[in-house]
Image 1 (cartoon, rainbow, N blue to C red):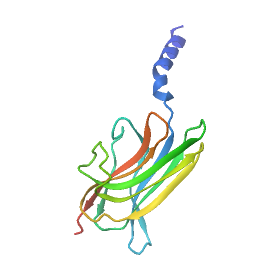
Image 2 (image 1 turned 90 degrees about the horizontal axis):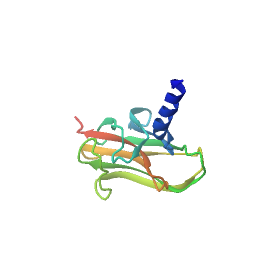
Image 3 (image 1 turned 90 degrees about the vertical axis):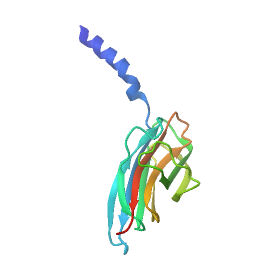
Image 4 (image 1 turned 180 degrees about the vertical axis):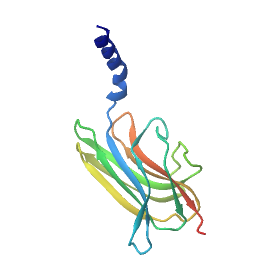
Length: 170
């Protein structure tokens, strides 16, 4: 007799944890490219997180690279919102210098940007989009590689991020 009551109470308590609709799945990769473009090596990957809280819920993976080496950021974003079209969503990606690894705030995109881009589109349910951008980090330091959604008409935005440590060439 208590079992159905207990299950009903648990369902009511846990429902808010599972009811928040996720709108995007993001798969982000940092890739090391051979100088002759014959090979590539996946340095690290990250999956979708969300804000709030600032900086997301998950710790960012760290990719270690050498200053000046050929790199690529690659992402695929899939709209997982099943209830209609998300209009005028912006997808933005960038690599920018940050003060320290894992910092919660996004650095100012007016300084220290290595590469950046954005596009705006309507996302139908199941829509998938991606990009691959090559770049080089010219100065040693810690950088944030991030892909994010903006203007989803939601109470939160999705992103995937990687901290990149660029070291001096030996």
